[in-house]
Length: 550
Image (cartoon, rainbow, N blue to C red; front, side, top):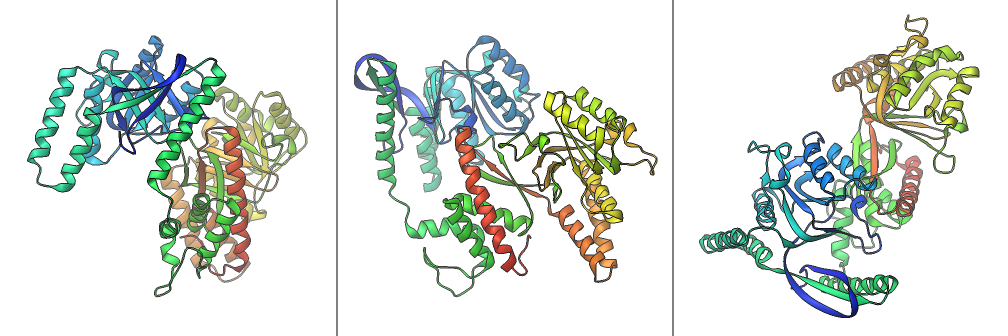
């Protein structure tokens, strides 16, 4: 089997331990999302008698997938989806159905790149007896039917690999594929190409090692499986060897080369000279993890020392950084009653409607149209106004407490003309309009098209972050250019500084640090580490003269 051969562990009735080789294939890619993993102790999920859907496309939209997902769901069988990429709505839909136990599925990214990935996916289709779907060839996943899907007796997916056991493909078809591969190997005059072809041939002609464990009880079986998995992991880690200081230094500093000084020698324990290097050391120490520290420093490098950073749970494994449109400002929730998450310290509004008012709101009637629109769309609502008080504030608190409408209210940042200008910035970002009696657009007449939108809003007692604002990109760019022109036309002084601050908030965006985790507890633990790293880096901002985002 080799050091990286496919090994699968399963429980059987009876005692003892036995090894069997069964026809199968190992892919060097595992589950795209931790939410597909059903056994968090062994970090794996098992699909028995699954359908197999193979696509050469990047699947992000859910609409083309819906017909075949509904067909598979009606059979009660699970689904393995192997594609060039699965993301966006498609991934979110698969995760939601998995968590609701409506469809047991796992999405796996096809290994390799370009033509090699295409060939490997075609190998999978031949092995499992299914078709290969490709929109480029006029045969996208919207044309998939049950009779065109592949199958296997069993599929075992971990974080890092996928083992397909006893694929349902026609043996003659598999043998023909093998013969063609051998012919390509013989005809190739490139050592590199020949090596890749031989890897594919080994995968198609190879077997999967099946370790069958007998046990007298379920508890004993769980423990014996855990011991075998630990033994396999230990053997593989021993074969791979520990990471050297040189490898570790290279990995940690790879994304921060711009701050290294020419002619200076660095070691795994040496200090580096620039502010970003100091940030990397602090972030890594606070997070207790080089990879988490690296992501935090990348985020600071993109949005600046005092830029907007937010943390959310990712649908994917690992830690990733995304820069999105949005804004963070230093005004928090007007009432602690809105802070219903993280032990009363935070409010998270998913896909909220955003009401912007350049006046104080105290009357219930000023809020009713926006609340009715939120109820109709099934979305929460964020109110940003000069102030929200009296009966209006009490109405929002009651609706949040009762669960009728999830709501939150914050004051606009700034005051006077400066505050009004920031509201216009927010209107451009979110695609809404600024409401006020004086402008002839009273808050009490807020129709859905006058409300802004965002993918997410995170509110604490001190600040608000609008993440992935959904305004028109052209309108956002136009607003940035307008504020930039105002900065260039202004003279040095407080007014210019205020304009520069608006420009930085408007153009800087929000760095979203996405954390993948198998469990809620793991996510919260990693989140605390990242928050500690961010706090440590921001403490350096006082001494980071000239430091900032790109």
